[in-house]
Length: 499
Image (tube, rainbow, N blue to C red; front, side, top):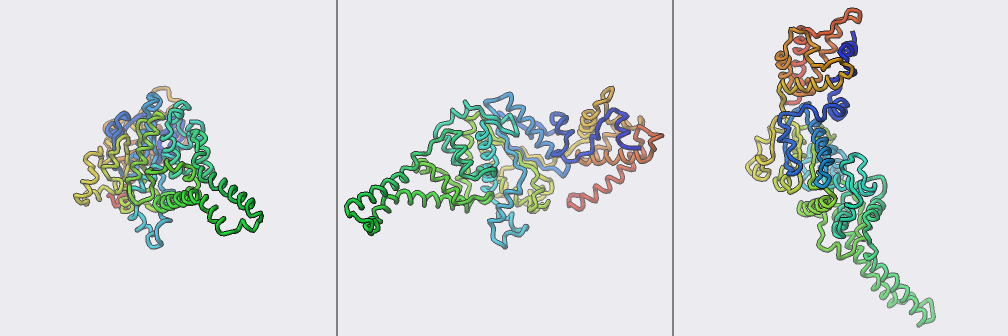
């Protein structure tokens, strides 16, 4: 007997429990995003009109990625109904590009995986988040206001026209530092953004014009007075020409110095100093004076740049920024190590940053690092103020919650069923709903539930032939499969150090 025979009998067109990762789970994406939520959903999601940070710890398979996708889906729905109070969503879950660039900046000795992340700081997180946000915003503007990944992030031409000259300058400055679209070179994508924003830069070239004009006039006068080409090479002629070019050369040097500082201190992305100098030279000198540059190993300039990004987004119809942080245990530099996860995440626990006005952080973290919280000193808690961050130490599921999850999934796949289907319908009548809830309660997490039911279907079908099928899962099959599954689960927990 095959599993699809069992499912076909109930009108289920695909196995509801075949996928274990929410990121690649089509059943979840198409049918369950707005279905069953965790009991702590209201505390985690909050209210987009009054954004608040949440810190969630959960074991592998407890639904952190599913929670991130549900938050993103709910925010997209909110954006469509509140076009002038939208939340700008930043998916902070692919760390490999940032960590690769960061590691390349370290000395040979510090590049070892056990040491590299010990050098990670809060401003590295800020640079990473700014990179994701600015790149997405710049891509949308260059694409005539259309966000190819999320229509709720679209920007109208009328909103772009409301940007003031200083706001356009701020956006162009942010794009110079953080726009990381690799389809074209940095100067080309910056120029395209400038044209979309109608940000004129010709006044910035006044010193270049003086240099060219002064050179032509000096050479013409010299030839006219001396009537000899040899006079062009006189030392006083060279000095006069250099004097005309001095403002231009001095400004180029200052732009290069700024570009070099940014290249040295922004460690999570690769900047080409020459390209960045070329971009910075497009700004008027008066527009650069007093502006924040991420050229120092500190967060002050990043806070100011973040505030300016918020000002631009506010004009474009976004009243808040929501940062969804997930999958911190997956980067190759972390490789699931609790110690390295702590080194990567702990700098974020800064109350000033987590409570920055207009920004909500949803930190979905593995439970393997919870033990480190109990070993932190008083200074850590004073700086992080985790008591203010809507912290959930365990994203645990009750048997009732998992029972609802199983029902949602099987009903989503029961497209040919004649009546509403329940997970209990697949089991022998002697197995009550409360008994099933008790079994599911032992499984703790949705991923464990899916693995167990998938294995149970296979075990049941292996006991019967296609000619003499049995459509109900028997008690002895459920109990024996559960015993083996729990043994394997405990062995896996011990390997992870969580058992």
